[in-house]
Length: 330
Image (cartoon, rainbow, N blue to C red; front, side):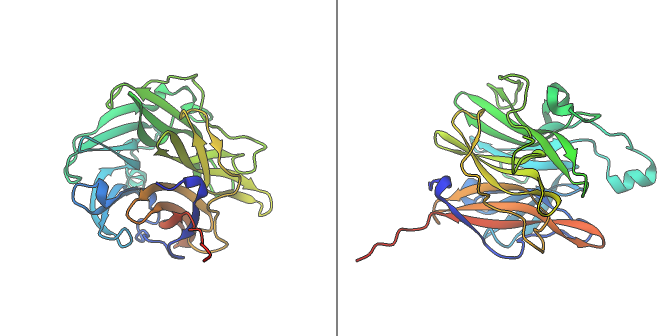
């Protein structure tokens, strides 16, 4: 497995791999299973729209075909695999559809969020959801909000325990009204199905730093990638760009040896928004995997920029990371 800190990253294409339909302008937070991780030898992608969790498949990892809608109103999917079982973990509020709710007058109240889990052995049939973590159990999830929120869950095995990472609370950016995660936290359990409890002080692992160049507004999305004895994380922090006089994001690489104390590998971003086009506003989230037969990393990411019918679009693109080969002079 190549060292992530030595990787150089380049876009697979200037265009996104996957875009939404007219009635689904935003597709967000991709989660991918490689062919060697799936039961059918295909690529599988999970992401969410305002409708819920979508499941797509591919034979190449580039061209994708829709397969099913898994969970209405689910957000930010993550797949954990163990003993030939697939565990789909995601954020959930209520089942109300925004546009329908406005017409019927139902569901006008806000609600706290929770993290649910479904199980499958074939990636086709899924069990009924079970509650994994209640947002009301996290003290800082309700900071500056009327109702607590936890988001973007991800699960790893850490020794003899399971560790669940998540975003907590959110802020609405003043210039675009985009919602982003304020904090980054974790809980642990001896059992995959819980109960999950905090094993450290009841404070976030990461939070905004007012005088920081890249993370002065919010932590944003963070994807943890285990690599042997080291944990890496791809963070999309939120900051105020004083030169462009607007809010922005980027993609940074973090590192941790215990999963609780995190530091940046470099202050140089892996990816920043483009000057124009589909990824010119925000880099919102990503999923990263090492493809051993190609000796490179695949980073699927979602980003926003373009508008259609006055609606901001969010699409999914791909970065490829590899270590440049040394040239040997003869």
